[in-house]
Image (cartoon, rainbow, N blue to C red):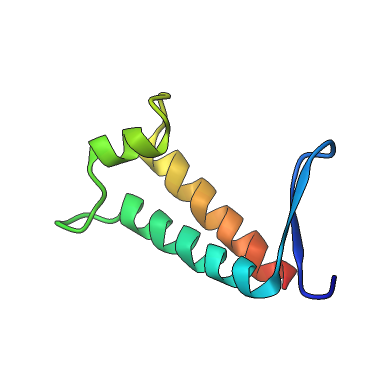
Length: 77
């Protein structure tokens, strides 16, 4: 499908339409910003823990992952 993005591992994949990929990229980029920034709008440690489903995760690593995936989605469409 033109303008779509495939997300997933080799054994399972999800197709995301162009407009949804754009929206997801913006969301991930903003999430990365809210993770990395200082100030009152920064995500709290409790919010970060909830995003990580209780697994230990470095805030900076999660921010980097979000922004990296957003960049890949922007490239694909």
